[in-house]
Image (cartoon, rainbow, N blue to C red; front, side, top):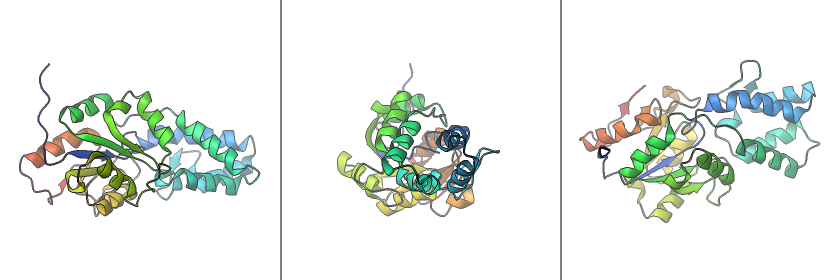
Length: 251
């Protein structure tokens, strides 16, 4: 087996968002949410309609509006939206239902993840995950895809570091790994991801496997890639002498 192409040493850490970045947002959550709403509503059409409105979700097209709290919000945001629509459910009931349901969802990989993570780790890059999902669900999703061991750091909104767009999770990655923020990149599909990276002092990469478009992300990103599969080529472009401040747009 030939050695993987060398990637730049200037960048030592890569932190990924999960939904919309490692996993394609539409193909993972679009159809699943329709079933989730039906399950919660238990045949009550008014409750189902209220839930769809709370999620900014169109049941017929199985599409989320860009304003949906599901896209980048924490589980608490989703739980609050459900409780407003289904006030008879307790906080504990809703939280447990969401946690169990999201942990078992079949995630659709944005690109084949295992080969990509193998390549990045072979290049001595330290990988982290920072998600506004719960940490337990995140670990379950990575383990299902056989890539959990590739990650030196996994944090969710409930891990004690705060939620994006605040930089707490990214600062915790640096503290745990000893890698300074200027040697890290944050890769994500939403403005929350990129704002978090900027606030932590990292370079930021936007990907288009969520719901955000190039214009949505371009003011926050050092580069915009179609998906994370283009990341090794971008990294090699940096090592070939492209200035770090010069955006590399791939759309």
